[in-house]
Image 1: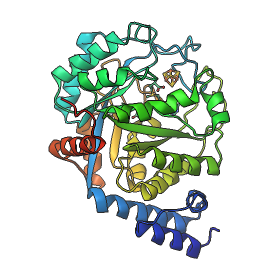
Image 2 (image 1 turned 90 degrees about the vertical axis):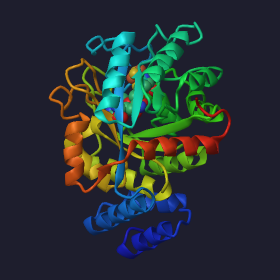
Image 3 (image 1 turned 180 degrees about the horizontal axis):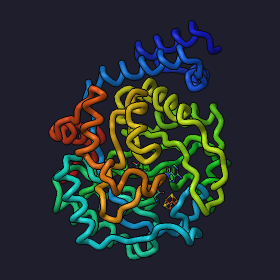
Length: 361
Ligand code: SAM
Ligand code: MD0
Ligand code: SF4
């Protein structure tokens, strides 16, 4: 089921807006022959352009605490890694970083943290809500929060403090694999984060990792589960092995696996936002991801501020390559432009209106 004609039939079907079966999604995910790959990427780009033109959105990344109570097997910041890079930014630093990212031209500030015991500590997330409120008072762009898992009753308060987006990636929708990747964490509680966020009127992002032991069928299944969840942004990120972690010597997947996954995600989720993360291959990985159908550049990090990335804690950061200024040069070469901020603010507002239930102030 991988000849040119089969591929063409499935691509045609998705172009007509018809729903693909699990088998068809899997067949597309298995394409590796160069002519079929070209057709897949071409089609994904055409679908993206149909909905978003040549405009992309840029997300600023503020990893404000790298302390974590969890022990995810893939993560550099896992509790047991005594050689990790640990820091906790002060309130003033978080505001300064967010404001300067806004001034540099990003469309969104992504406030991300490990499950820092100081914040996940039983005081009803007062500190987290305060941080969001402070940043919301300081910036006018939408805010994404990536805090790990929080109790259901916190979502309304986070929304009222100014959160627009809630990001929490399942990594896989295969429960056995989840158990290995995120030991001692509850699959259903994590999956519920996305549902609870949307019930509170927030937009939600779901994501998977590529190359962590999942099968092609697992990837196809995840793409379908994401459809069912009706989240607004979906991502696939290649696993990058981290020193001093249980998966340090695992062989990662070739990046083509991520690119094909992004393209198939675009076909199955034509109107959603799909990130091209700078956190995997740095700036040199931008064009292949945008060409595969991604339309958001994530993990923009200002230089020389002592901030880390997640999968690449230093790559391209301190020389300024992950700043908006530098990214815009690459965008121009790729024939895409930074969307006007008003486009993004309008999109977020429209999508939140559809979710109903408590529009954000
Ligand atoms: N601590 C919170 C959590 O885990 O939900 C928020 C941090 S979130 C930005 C961390 C995400 O980065 C993970 O969900 C995973 O998808 C990605 N990530 C972490 N380590 C990675 C690695 N070694 N390679 C690729 N992606 C990684
Ligand atoms: C990224 N390193 O965009 C970030 C991170 C968290 N919401 C996003 C995985 O690639
Ligand atoms: Fe902690 Fe998130 Fe890393 Fe897991 S992925 S160890 S929760 S920072």
